[in-house]
Image (cartoon, rainbow, N blue to C red):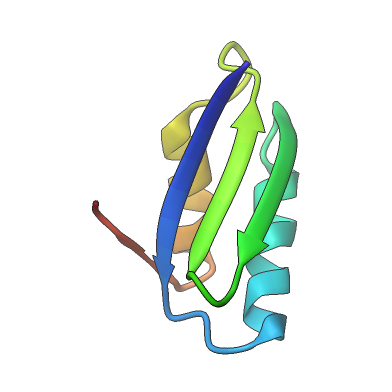
Length: 70
């Protein structure tokens, strides 16, 4: 199992955080996902044989939010 985290720009409310969380949970292979609105961060674990880090990035980008490269 692989773990990842992403800084998400553009989340301003709990509704935004819930949308991001839902999108992360829809990625095939996700095991667990959390979104922290105050830190603008999404943390997730996944089966690396079913999904990739880029799948999670793309799920967030598809919602209209931006990923902040660390």
